[in-house]
Image 1 (cartoon, one colour):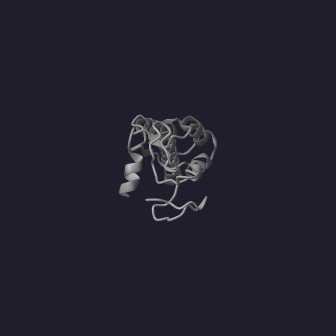
Image 2 (tube, helix red, strand yellow):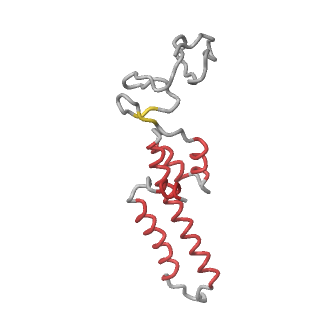
Length: 155
């Protein structure tokens, strides 16, 4: 539960009141709009409208989360936000979670953001993980030989 709350903290602050206003406005319109010729709302209808507002609230928060998380991961945040908005039934958000990139890691030398799969920093050229001296591919620290070219690794 604690990690879920930490993840929700990346949602921009402006999204929370917007989601509340939209969900509250939706409930206000349904409950306060005159219903000429119709009986008052039953408890089932009230519960259905409440769940609809809650789902809509969660959808707006999801849009804010996708925007902030894709931006944090160095992805195309506008594109993913628009896909989340316009692809119905949460399919855009599901696609985002299936296809999202790993978190960026800071370079130890220039503190720029780099993908975790990079061997060298694209900004300053610092080595981010051990690499083979011959083929420059990433190697594990416990390897004695490079798995790609067979060159013996020197510590």
